[in-house]
Amino acid sequence: MSAVLPRPVGHAHDDHHAQPHGWRRWLLATNHKDIGTLYLLFSLTMLMVGGVLALMIRTELFQPGLQFFNPQLFNQLTTMHGLIMVFGAIMPAFVGFANWMVPLQIGASDMAFARMNNLSFWLLIPAAVMLVATFFVPGGAPASGWTIYAPLTMQMGPSLDMAIFALHIMGASSIMGAINIIVTILNMRAPGMTLMKMPLFPWTWLITAFLLIAVMPVFAGAITMTLTDRHFGTSFFNAAGGGDPVMFQHIFWFFGHPEVYIMILPAFGIISHIVPAFARKRLFGYTSMVYAVASIAILSMIVWAHHMFTTGMPVTGQLFFMYATMLISVPTGVKVFNWTATMWRGSMSFETPMLWAVGFIFVFTIGGITGVVCAVAPIDIQIQDTYYIVAHFHYVLVAGSLFAMFGGVYYWGPKWTGVMYSETRGKIHFWGSMITFNLTFFPMHFLGLAGMPRRYADYPMQFADFNMIASIGGIGFGLMQAYFVLFVVLPMIRGHGRPAPQKPWDGAEGLEWEVPTPAPWHTFETPPKLDASATRVIG
Image (cartoon, rainbow, N blue to C red; front, side, top):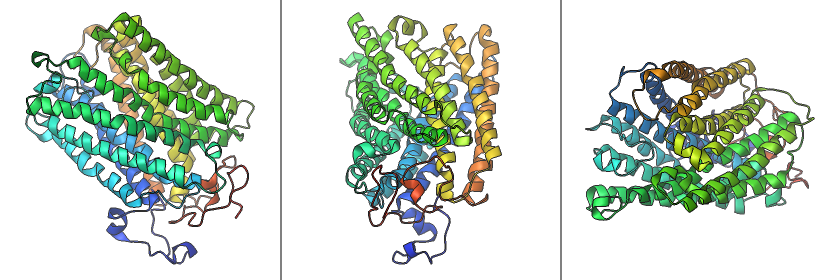
């Protein structure tokens, strides 16, 4: 999806670097654009796989009673859907965006460690294959929920060991990607681009990368302890041997909560580029946005036990985690306010990227508010493990991360592929996704408030109507993403569409619009001289 299409070799840029061709170009890729493309295509594939699992879940829940799958298989579907979407779709997609955009936006020639970049991508392929292959081993895929809670993990078959191995490999890939991004941003910015002149997308990724390095090893520790409990006679999480299953939850959520911010901060970066471009104004409150992102990242490390209000923690613990969680809503609110203020009295136009950005702000805010509801310990004790939680985190992860990524694909896609997408198709994709998404997940708030538990294959009759609505919405949402792949992404990759100008959006700012379209194989081989705002190349 990239400078991916073979181009004539006569470019001044390409004379002194023979561009590799055929399979070698991809297998041995060291160019950040190609690796970015590989990441994006991989995550799109995994999104489709995770999407099929989601459709199977919603098919089972269309009516009460066991319809198609036994409860064990149903739990395998919910577990694998979570793992594939988090580690296979959302995270690699943002790394793809980082690979493509960070060097372009900071005026660097490439990523700092080109070969490590290649390795960190190719590790994902065997990990993903191993994860999906768990469906075909004796006992079926892991069915312990994506959170892999002990003691359930003691009862799983060999598939769990495969999943642990796959997650280790994916974690290693994430850590390498994070190191690469940090070094690139700190060491390779064009002269004149100070940190506080840097665009917001590299900023959000710099902070996300530090989060990744902080919490990925913790996750690796938790799943390794699970592995040794299963096979080597340790009792970290086995109460009979003096361990504590709740300890697993502490270690897991110390990773798990920063993880959800790893999945949303780059989305904030993308939205902070799209909104000013289509409001034709500078971003309101740039400095406060940077500080807000940093505050969110720091606070994300001290809120983990809000996932564990019902595990019998002391009231003091509940109070601390409740107030710490509520505190995160302040910097998040600052960001939403700044985006709104950027739009205020701007000369707005609503091309597809802007629709996604405004849609994002709207639905993400709903997700944020329902999150504050979950943060209140006495309320959470009533709604934990119900569909209210499912509604909340899908509003944040789908309407947050995924919608922002769609916005990013429509916004930078022309720069990647050299052709414009079809505006009509983009709008069909947006409105179709927006309506069906809300049709799927909004009723779940009510199901949760009425007491319907999550991760069950069957439910009482009183929940039938809302589940039917949610399932119809889910199938519609799935079809909209298939439409996106077939009628938006494929034509762009194949170069069908009118040629994109160098800067398709008149309000856009930044160095990525200073290079030709499609972005050449090599950019900024000699560090560019920037103007005072660090948004234009002057020599």
